[in-house]
Length: 386
Image (cartoon, rainbow, N blue to C red; front, side, top):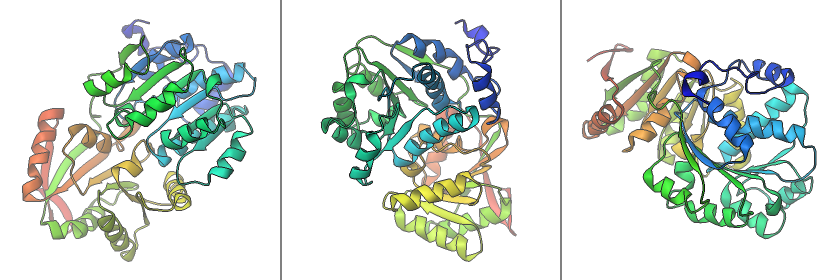
């Protein structure tokens, strides 16, 4: 399909029936994004590929939608589609998309979430129902394949979501192990907002014939997001978070902190000042994490404090403020964080809280991403020009 024709294509032209189109409209999705349009036919063709597109471009629906439609047309029971993700939260996020399509279309495409740190006996019981979609983290998925609880030989398509993370040094081997249990001709798809040379090299070990797709490569940072930073002493960061929240008064905020103690401290401080805030990080009980995310998704919680891993793949409409309490070296991760706000054309603000020694990160983001990040100061409860 020619790129010039993609931007104006409709769901009808992609071959969706009216039932699915109306189901998408209930989610306020009326037109396919470029990544959805450019990959739809390729997924249906059975070809393997990698797909790179910016955060918030609709990558999850890009692979769920064609596979979901195929599942409707083929009612034979059995595991057909395996989706590997790096985190518990992203697994449930993907599953929620399938559940939303079921609810809004009246179909009943079955799915199950399989991740570590959850009772394996209960997961095995669920797998006896032979769900069409199996979504989860690679370690537990591989364990259950070895136990012959997941029918690896029936899997038609393997999707590797957040591919840059799934093929890094920590996750590549187990992802590779899962792939080796599948049939040689299994379709392999990898989606990611960033695609390093190293990740592409590792993907080539999973399948010999594939295509690399990059949709909307020029749009790295949404124009709807304003970028700012505030300089303060390290021991003032927690109080600075509260001051920024008080100054901006966001409807919905996501705060990134890499450090469990500071996450708890910030959350406690916000709650003390009567803000509706919750937190998630690695050691939080799975049931609590699920409840916290559902509360944030359903607008019962206004502020979520989280680590990068806990929030990876978390796509929530309506976030108008992202605060980066602990800066990261990689500009791509800053891009992931900032991309959580300003979605679907809405206005958003991304603010980094840095020490004098951390200002170098701001300079690196500016250079790598070509964006203007303006320094602000807090004065009498307001954010003002430096």
